[in-house]
Structures are given as C-alpha cells and as structure tokens.
Amino acid sequence: MFTYIKNSIKGNYVEFAEPISQELNGGDLGTTFGDYTNGKWVLLSAEQLAFRTEHPTASVKEVFDMQLSARTLEQAKEEKLSEIEAYDQSSSVNEFTYYGVSMWLDKATRDGLHLRLLAEQAAGKTTTTLWFGTQSFSIGITDAFQLLYAIEVYASACYDRTASHKAAVEALESVANVDAYDYTTGYPTKLNIGSV
Image 1 (tube, one colour):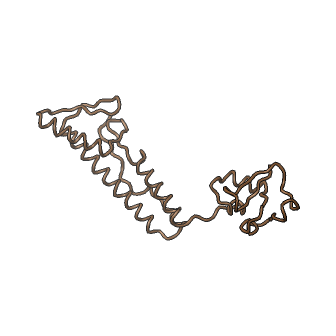
Image 2 (cartoon, rainbow, N blue to C red):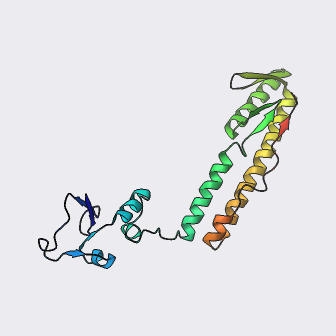
Image 3 (cartoon, rainbow, N blue to C red):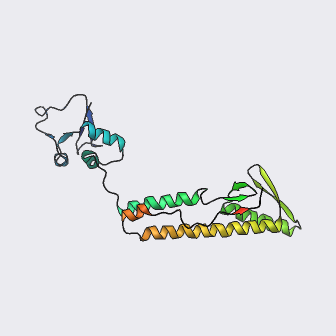
C-alpha cells in the first residue's frame, strides 16, 4: 500500500494499491509539507507511517516531520493537575489502618456514620458495630466519634495539601518546571489506629 496525504481530502490520508503517477495526475504530486499545504499529493515514507502508527493522535505536520510538537504550558499544567487529582484519590492518600486493616471512608460515608452515631447515642446505646466490607468492628460510640474526627482532620489536611499542590502548579511558568514538580510531598502521615 502507498499512503499519501492531501489537504483537500477528508481525513487527509489516502491509501492506494499502486503509487500515483505524475503523468496521470497532471503534475499534482509533491514531496514537501509545503506541497501538501498547496494541495498536492505527498507520498509518506515507511518511517513517517511508523511514526503515525506510534502516535495516532499526531497532526499531519507532526507525522510529516516525524516529531511531536512541544506541549504548551497549559497542556503541561492540565496533565499535571490530572495527575494530582488521581494521586489525591488513590490509596497513597485515601487510606488509614484500623487494627491492621487498611481502609478508607469517603466524605459521604463519614457523614453517614456521624449521623448514625448521633442517633445511636441519642437512643442510649454505648457501643456500635462498624463495617468495612465483610469485616465488622465493635467499638464504643465515644471511640467511634474520635475515630471519625481523626479521619476528618487527616482528610482535611490532605485536601489542603492537594489544593496547595494545584496552586503551585498553576503558578509555574515553564513546561520543564511543571514536569519536574513533585506533588507527592507534604501529605500527613497516614493514620494507624489500634494494634493487631
């Protein structure tokens, strides 16, 4: 197959079983990117096709030059902010250990447990059962409140750290600095409650 680029063709890329003949095509063949932008058919080399396969989202210019354009500062920041969000949602941040079991209670779960504990306390109960997956934990209601408060303080500190990392990335002024920024630093030590 012979792959050509032509700017007036939808999708820009066309494959033919045989090469296009200069004579049959009225001299509409070219060899440079400038020829392509002027509407000529330009045959891609095997190397250019391999580059296109490796970089399917590359522009026609990037394929022709076999080089990706430099990322803009905004693109670098968007990528880094996405990485920060993913890290913030991962077990690297969202995890604590309770009597040897690693777990996490998201904000909605913590809020629900707080209401449950208030209701059980108002009903005169002094202990409750907390569930994590298939594992249950019997705990005094006062201790359960303290557990939730400790998790909330930890989660708030993590939130603040994530927000400060995002602000720091937004303030950076070069792609190199954005790429080098380490967003894994400064988080509080994970909670380790109880012993096995």
